[in-house]
Amino acid sequence: MKLFRRPEFWVVTLLGALFVITVYADLLRGQQLSGDEFQLVLFALQQAFFLSVIAIATWRFGFAVGFFFWGALGAVTIPYAAIYLTVNWHPNLLLEMIVIGLVGLAEVGLINAYEQGKKKLLEYQRHLEDRVKERTVDLTRANLALERDIIERKRIEGELREALAQVKTLTGLLPMCANCKKIRDDKGYWNSVEKYISTHSEAEFTHGICPECLEKLYPSYYGPGKKKPAG
Image (cartoon, rainbow, N blue to C red; front, side):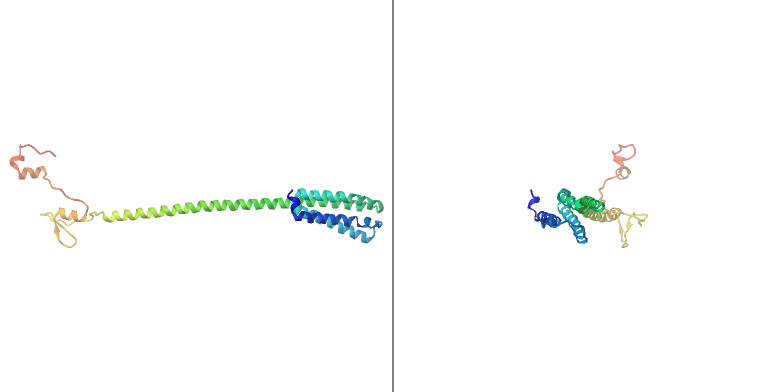
């Protein structure tokens, strides 16, 4: 298993073994278990050691390993607790041992909940970062498309302005001779209608003869009673 290949696991295991040695140190040396002040202080330190090992195991390896160390160390210390209470019976000591065991179990649950919440928070943060990156890419593409559209619009507007600049229109009042029908330009010159309109617009003229002028010019052909020209 990958767990057994991690140095931290063996460090925690070593700490657990040291805890067991400190618990059974008096028995291993053949000393009688007494309820003096020193023994009570040592017992309190052992409890702190017990909770520390469980906390480290849970924090580094998760709920399963933390719960395992809680159960293993608790099971190992039960014989010592039974011997100690037989020699130095007191209800408060039994209650204290039970409380320490429950505190250790609660410690495993709280640390695991904290680590799980931290893990979910990091996953949610990564998810948000991915969403931000995707949105940034979309906005960048949209911005590039908008820039291309603006460039295209400006190009079309330029072409329209050029086309409009080439279109010549006649506006306002045109001074025209009442007799010959010539038109006076801005420089004061009088021009024929054809020339003036051709100069100031894009119109071009072709010439023909209207029916009335045909009658006047060619009365023998298109006079009264003669055949009218078509159109």
